[in-house]
Structure formats: C-alpha cells, structure tokens
Length: 444
Image (cartoon, rainbow, N blue to C red; front, side):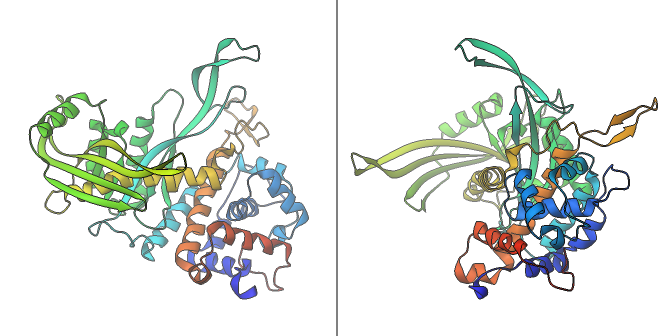
C-alpha cells in the first residue's frame, strides 16, 4: 500500500515549494505577549486539522497531546486547545487574508482555473450563508432576530436569536473552486451592504481582471450592485425574480407575445431537460435607472422516472427562469447565459454545502469565546481584545480548502491513478501524524 498512499512529508514539501507555506506561517501574529507557543505553530496546527478533516478543537487537542503533530508543525512543545483558543481570539486577520490572496494568485498562474473557461472567460459567483445561530450565546458581532418557537411545555414563545452571516466570492467554473474573499455582515445591516463592501475590496485584492464574469442571486439585482460591478470591470449574470416587479413583468409580457428564439434538449444522467429560450435587449432596468439591459428567459421541462409501487413511472416538472446580463449576445448566446445562470448553484453545492458537510464550517469555532488576551483601552483599563476567532478560523479553513482541492484535483498522481476521494486522501495524510518526522526537519 506504500505506493498507493500519500505521505505527509510529500504534502508538506508540496505546500512549501508551491505556496510558500513556511514563509506565510512566519508572518502570523496574535495579541499575546511573549507566548511560549508561537502564532505560526497555532496557525499550522489548525491548518493541518482542516486538511485532516478533524471536526472540532477537542479532537485536535487529542492529536496534539497523543501524536507527533507538534513535531510535524515545528511547535516548541506540545500544547492544548486552550492555547489555540487564546491565540486565535486575538489573531491578526491581515496576514491570513494576504495568504489566501497569494494562494489564489499562485493557482491562477499555475492555470488551475483554466479548465472549464466559458468562451475563454473565468467565472466567479457571490452569495451569502448563515454560519451559526443560538438562543443563548452571543458576541459583539452577532446579528439578532426575533424567532417564534415552542417551549418544553408546548407553548408558543418569541425569543431573540443570535446568528452570524457572511458573503463569499468563489471561483465556480473550474474543478478547483477556491474562495477569493469573504465579508461578514455587521449588526443592523443587510446582505446587500456586505456584498457591496466585498465587491469594492476585490479589485484591491486581486485586480479587476482576475475573473471576467460574476454570477449573482436575485437579491443583488439592484442599481448599486450593477454600478459596483461595472466599476470592477466585470460582466454579470443575475437571476431575476418577481421581487424586481417592473422588469420581470415587462419581460414576461414581451416574451409571451412571440415564439422562442431557440430550443434545445439537454441530457444529464437520468434527467432530460427540454428547453425553450427567449432573448432580448433594451429593457429598462428600473424606472429610476432606465439603462437598458439584456434579459434571457428559459422555460424548462424536466423529464425523469420516479418509482411508484416499485415501478419506474415517467414524471415531468415545469420550471421558468429569467436572468439579466451584461454579456454581449454576439459572443454569449442565450444557451450559454442559461448555463451560466444555473452554474451559480455550484457556489451552493461545491462551496457552502461542501464546507458545511465535510469541513465543519458551521461548527461555530470560538463564537462568543471570552477567554481572550487583554489590551489597554483609551482610559488605561485592561480589556479583552475584540474576538477575531471566528473570522480567523474561517480564513484558515478557506486556505486549507483551496490547497487541499488543488492537491487532490490537479497535483496528485495517485488520485488520478486509483480514483481516490478527497476524504481518503485526508485520511492517508492523517495517518502520518503518528509517525516520527524525518531527522532533518521537513517543511511545515
């Protein structure tokens, strides 16, 4: 089995040679004063925990105490999860974001995003997710809402629920679907404001030409978002729903009076889609912003078999979709726009859902943690530093997600030869932390 298993030394060498992991780790800092365990060791411990798919800090604590993981990451000594929590709550976020940006830039230079280009263009998607919620635990950055539920006696009561929500931008067209950036919602604001902040920051992080097309949900069909997208230099495909009533009704009335511009049949496994497409340009976006936009409408009949009384029975369902786009019709046909509109769901399936189900994203790491380093405020009092634990752990998770995805999908010959899953690769790497590192210290 030796020739069919991945080793931690080779994975460490891949990280250090291809992504300068040791250089980035040395730049990590936190709010502790003269710590015994460096911020670099804390970062590497959490990074390896996500690479190994460990679900919690409790399991990482066990690995740090009963394996050779401290030696593998170059820690000064073995340490416990209280050190992790105390360090991460005061972790500096800027070096983590800089590393995520550098990883994505290296992936692009290595052509990791080239596979799956749409008409030669790179495609990204932006959407939000609720990370965690609680009726009892809260922090200064929590959002609040009133929720009705039943108490143990069955009576209906209304309580305040605390939760966190974030907006993320992810590459979605290629096999390696890494996240470019993430923005957390602040108390009292909506998802659209956080999205505008993220769109405003992306050109400064990557430049306006890092990707070409941005896919958005119906929530972002707003004039400020379109203005920000034009400012960033991207084309856009936005799902259109009835909450944008004027444009939606105008498009429906226009398309109802004429036959479809194109038809196609698409086979996807046991499913068959029969599609009719309408395409028009020159519809005003809103009364206040009458700038014309292109609208594409799709009527789809999904045909598949469903089992009833142990027998396959044909079943069909009807779906209607509308999208607005800035893509030129001469290059991007209605069929391509439809495919791009549906590709937005990759952000849900291969992004948020993958992180949630297989990377413990909704675990709520360090949410409302009160064991934090102290700092002096303006009055000279010693107060806890702002809790940056959840954003810090999220950055490390996104870095591990990008590096592991590229290792499995683009780098590993064993995956291509033996069709190993990403989870199997993580298990093979995890098995190595019980072995002694080489006599010459391996790259962390």
